[in-house]
Length: 106
Length: 106
Image: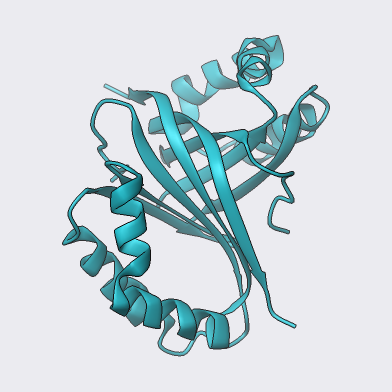
């Protein structure tokens, strides 16, 4: 359920957003986009949560994979619709994950 | 509403969690922890969202600030309670934010 990423280092794209009132077609597009991302070379995983704010963090092998995903034409179209319709504001941060650790209850 | 962080680079602590059924006292502790984090030297901002998964991303000036926050005794106590009671599993990732960009609808 939490993205099972490999040993560090790898890259994270942290996408934080506030939506408009108009969410028509959003969930469908978001699901399609995740399926599309999973097919990309260098994709490592993705986690999403939404309450007042939405946060999606996708994980990638290297900056080249991040760049190629940004240039993917279907992804570009989705981002255009996002700016036009669904998002009031968003922020995207590209970060290099340098260390990680986890916990699982027995 | 989305954390207004300064020019890159800075650090992100990406905390992704799955909760147990027992959320008694959790929200109160989470709110207190955010207030406490805000008082720390080098704290830059925090964003949170929760649906099936919880994602909290806090932003820090440098790794030293991240380390000091990890060592904060109140924060340590909260993490112990988290492992004992509230969290089924979690993953913490420390990442260096190398670039960012944002969008605001007019």
